[in-house]
Amino acid sequence: MSHGGKMPYWEGQSYGVIPPGTNPKNGKPNSVRLYSIASSRYGDDMTGTTTTLCVRRATYWCPELKADDPAKKGVCSNFLCDSKPGDEVKLTGPSGKVMLIPEQDATADLIMVATGTGIAPYRSFIRRLFVEKTPYGEVYKGLAWLFLGVANKDALLYDDEWQSVLKSYPKNFRVDYALSREQTNKDGGKMYIQDKVAEYSDEIFTRMDNGAHMYFCGLKGMMPGITEMLEGVSKAKGIVWEDKLKEWKSKGQWHVEVY
Image (cartoon, rainbow, N blue to C red; front, side):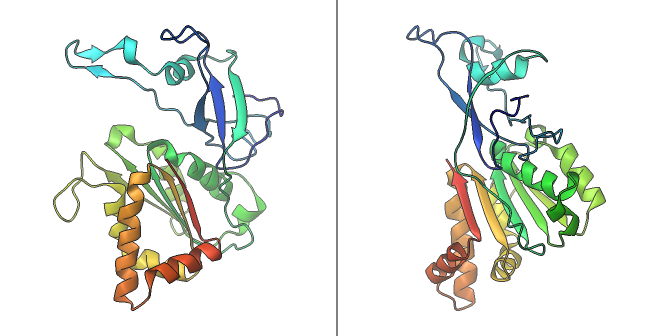
């Protein structure tokens, strides 16, 4: 969508959207909803005047109706998903912390962990690295490694884009999916994002010790499992985990934006 260059933003931020209409519960105008920005600061068209939001249509399946219940659908997500070219959208922001890639180091590995629409800032990273002709992208020699956790294949976001990048840059891009309703972890349970990351625990720890940056965006429920996994690797190496995490944070390698 176009913001006319009046609402510049950085990667990792969000825009607020105010849907038209009133709240039937109180008769007041609908309130603002936040949506993560999924384009780089330049916008998908590289003009600096547009933005792309990551929106998942919120619906509720009613077992009695055996259909989506229109009374319980997400007001704002459905407004955005049903909007057409030329429609006006009331925006606020940008807001929230920025989430940036370390452009001073062209060899830094970037380990990106997301659940659901938490994928948004990583799309902007990957576009800056492999799609847009940015100075950093043209000299990048590290590994951008994406982990995405969703319920099933139908819920995968931007998969066509990831596969295209993977085909063009197989040495610099990796992607791993955790599909909780379709895959099982090593213990036979559902495969959640923390289980998929744990499969590569030693490699991730080594890459972090070699200067990689690790990003987390999405549901906060993934964090305990991931930190416990890294703590286990740390103890096996005879390293105090609290000291190691403090070191990574002090060097700006640990980036968390969860809710």
